[in-house]
Image (cartoon, rainbow, N blue to C red):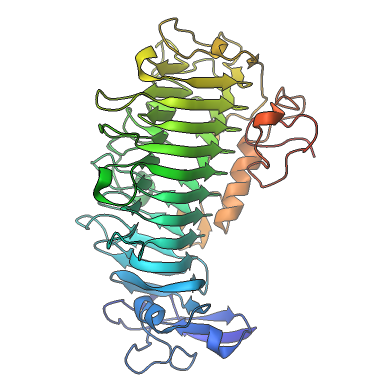
Length: 496
């Protein structure tokens, strides 16, 4: 390994200018060829630097414009102020990596990171946030502004803490963006009061959202919670034929953890389709192996919502906890302008409320399993799922298109999951170099949540109860499900 002494965190080198340096960190970079690795650091210079340890560059955007395909750009600890505008096309791909994970902050009073004319870039290990109230919209925006496939392509955000937008979404993937991967990040505290989202996938294709943690904790960031934030993930198409994509498609949402709802009570953890438009807003969407936790007293609309979309599969997910809501498990709806939903399937899921109040929005309210007006959906499948309401009856409404007995292989049994009511908010605590609960990495937080609240206890009814023909190949921890025999229900494969 090559050791570099670089100016650190409180140094505050800006994408627009520099601030006085302070303390140092020892940063270790891979011992690879000099032509393959470059350094950005506080105190560096875009004018006289060459990207070496002795003469680092000052800004990420300049570094990206200089390096060859296949290169790595290591960014030393510090706070970098201003917009990071990524550009350039890299067939093999380049990686822009925080030299010390989470110790490099990208901060701006408007969009922090843009990728409008870039392709083949991975951004890894950063803290990305707004300066505070009054900021412009978004933290990250990935789009194809030219509309010709020249931008917003093959972009990966990995192992970043993306939090506290003060205006609109945390991440916007829109306007023809394609082949985008959001992997292993932590998302919390979107903007408001505009019902904004953590991730808005809007007229995009080939998007994979995997291994992330989604939650809100506005008070932990010194912000008031007005219960006016929106769904955590939205997949839709607002702009019709304005770009090359009509209807977001080929979207996969897998192996994520959702928790700590603090938003508007007409929104969801995940919504497929949101706008009043006369075409399918999304199709070919797979939602699998996710853990959705009801650990908050703030009500939401429903865990999962499909509106004016088709060819949607929701399988091997675990929805667990006291989830105050208007419907616990699912909602199928449309506006008058939307075509009716078509071919929406639910396989091998676990829906479990240990408190016996499934779908009740407030104490004393009646429960509700699903909301689905018959006129809003042409076809759906509900097959081989587990339903548990703390030993109480599963809520039933004969006027709804979907009830638990719409499932010909319904299993009403206790999955033996721990109640998530006591989850510790995993907000990033930079002064400690730890997340709430004590973990040092996003992955450690993720594993702790899955092991504590997604892993059924011995004797659970989930064991060997899944329908093999509709099973996911792996579980939320990327462990293979059995190729022969019967896998387990829900997000976690219990059996070895």
